[in-house]
Image 1: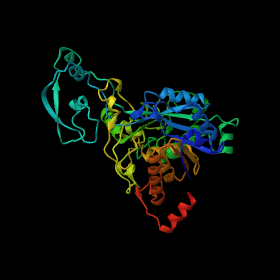
Image 2 (image 1 turned 135 degrees about the vertical axis):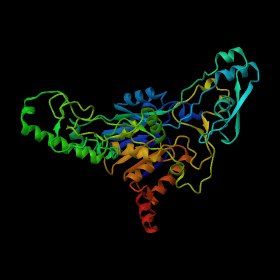
Image 3 (image 1 turned 45 degrees about the vertical axis):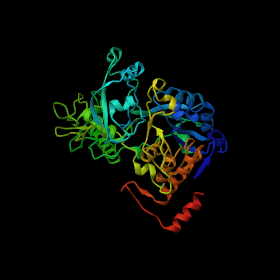
Image 4 (image 1 turned 90 degrees about the vertical axis):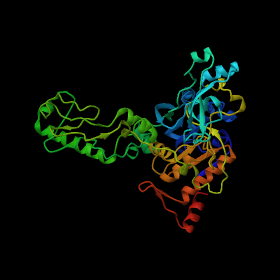
Length: 466
């Protein structure tokens, strides 16, 4: 375990070549976030070249990015020598549309006061900058119990543009999935030599009680999507093939759903389920209730008979992992820290060149005062899921943009070694406290509870982690 304070370009040079198994990071998105100099652009190609140098051949890089600047992030990573393997999409439901009300600003520019036509309460769970145009539409977010005036357009121009804004509701963040080129001829050779190059499919499967395989029963035969092959007319070979498929299906049933390149938080999952409705997978059989070369069970092939159904009930979100950030997750281990106000948010950003408050330096939304005042804290569960996906068991993961330490906290929870780099001293102190709390209070993922360990064990762990 190493936590390094300083600029990542300098500190990366202190790390040995080919010594890191994976990189999982949430770097600056290049949005001039909160007018912070460190977020004027996405990380440079030079930084990603250093990241590739320290990675073992075949090691994976997972880097969050902004929806507006993903292309710049991906291109720089690719230009540094990485292979772009995929894009993972983290979808969340709690994002707030940071949109300017064009109609309201037209009236304001004309110096005309708008007439009040009603009022509404502020909505809990959000705390936005004191932008009159936002409050007029969505309520007073500083005080969810306070009433906020709803106004109507005054000028003809404002009436013409009523209902127009400048930004969509942010609801996703893309993740660049890249890999350092293999040094060996095949993935198998690379995995055997370095332990890197593959993806941990089984440990990243999504747990479920659904019947993934369709509940194979006696006498079942295999659906092969209409293809006719000579061996299919051999009853003994068909039975052998069906038994193998049944064993495979039952194995996958135990492990869970195959990991996808899309991840939902609970709120986004709820929204998706409301749109998709609750459904059950259909009957897996043909008209005759047996294999005749015409049965097609869809994306998951399985065995077919008259009584066979997937038995898979729920909304569309059941296919995806659902983490979310909680106040507890954000502030664990920070009891002695002072609460501070910060301005921030995630993902989509509105057109702040036209925002009346842009000159004040308020960029994004004012968040509730918090001991962990980092503006973009990622869920520990989400970071652990990503680490497990691309890191060999017990391997070392690196976060060159550590922030408040969510990646390090997740690495400790999953039994991985960790190297973190952070340039801001305030954030480093928060990261150290959060990671130490995770070491001192092991989290049991099965029970969802922590176990406080004995003092002498803490001392041993502290020595081990330096």
